[in-house]
Length: 128
Image (tube, rainbow, N blue to C red; front, side, top):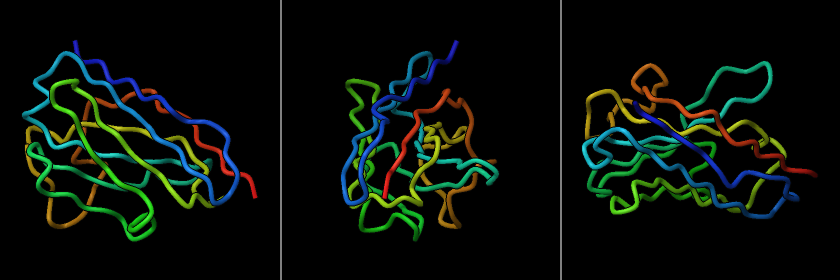
């Protein structure tokens, strides 16, 4: 049984930082590319970042490029998301997920449909 648990969300002022974590069990973590996503109320889930199984390849959505950094620790089966220079528009529920049967990230973007094994999410709220 695959379990995905996100943590690290919270309330922060604009310009602040948060570090999210995502712990995965029940699958061979090192075999999968991993991604971070977010969903704000009334909006579709948005792909933010992807990291390959070796960490050699990383991709970011334009909305977070230069502010957020994805990383992973295979020994700990954990995915990380360092978020800096946060803005009120970053307020959302944040999720991580494993890419379906793929160890690398797609060159054509970070699509929700390419990912499976979702966690419950962790809420990030940025006040102005």
